[in-house]
Length: 456
Image 1 (tube, rainbow, N blue to C red):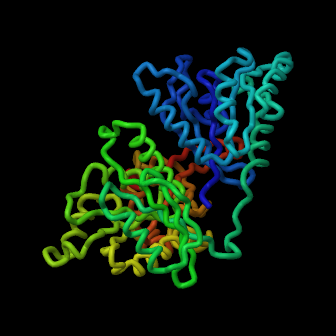
Image 2: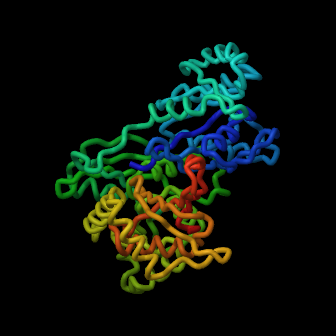
Image 3: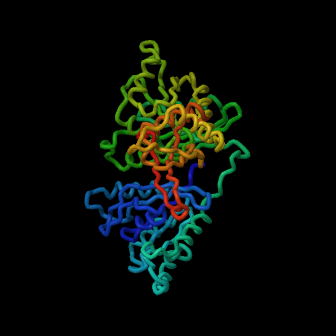
């Protein structure tokens, strides 16, 4: 499983960004009295009692943004809630319970995840009596904290640790079913491909009914292994989303990508790569999902163009995803479909692979010796050690003397070494740099960042 996510939510101006900065021990989120400063999600790697998780800050729920970005802010909040393992529902003790707090509570009613009600701005014990009114939100005992006076930090971190999902055993007792999201723009043959899978194997266990605008799950088997294919609606350019049906089709396709273990991104060789294809590819990369570029309907094009030309076309178009494998299939007849599924299974295993700390550090030290990092402000950046803290995607933390001293070019070099030397050759890798403090008194503070592979 990936790193657990702890997501901060609440109405505007209850101190969500202050809470975020306070918990991580450094100023990352912008704090301002003007409502709506935080629009996009911010995330930060935390380690508490040897347990790693990502803390995520979100914008205020229910705000009408002055720059007409309300829909964007709400979308980011929705995505954060969907991916959360624990939610911190922040309220303001000094202002008390307001209708917008109740609206936030209503939106969280059907979220089947642990929710901690955090009563912020409880600066002194004299305000504790005012915390009781938040019991009306039906989220258990509110936890009184104050980012200003430092009250309740340890209690809040302990409450978070108690509600995190249990750590996954390194070797699961049985191989789970792999979820395959089949995505692409319209008329690339996605549904035909799913129908071919179902008819060829004749072992459909279940099919969730829906229309062509829904995401449909089809369970099937191949060589004794179970798969779930998620057939998604074809997408159009965002400016063409003129109806609610188009909007929800896009929403369901993106949700299917987030659910998936491996994404099959379909292309039609009779059409040029479009902006929709690039947007889908970007979204898959943002979600750190293993992916295969699938050129479908190849029987219509194979005689007039060699596969190498389309491979070059895809590589030139999606330069940051050079590690993604490419498959040429004919979904209608089933040609090369079995090989495609076997390759998807291999990517699934790569995304769930773990390497020992010793092996990882041997690879890092060899990389440093072969190609040391360039000087930063006339100083040599140092990487002390590395550890893998999660899977799906493989997540690696590098402890160094100064995170910003490791340049983007050098991070790309390290990612390439990891792919060459570790069992992550064709899947995205999430890389964190974490600054190791020089004194025990500052051990809880860190300077780190994470880089999506389209930036690293």
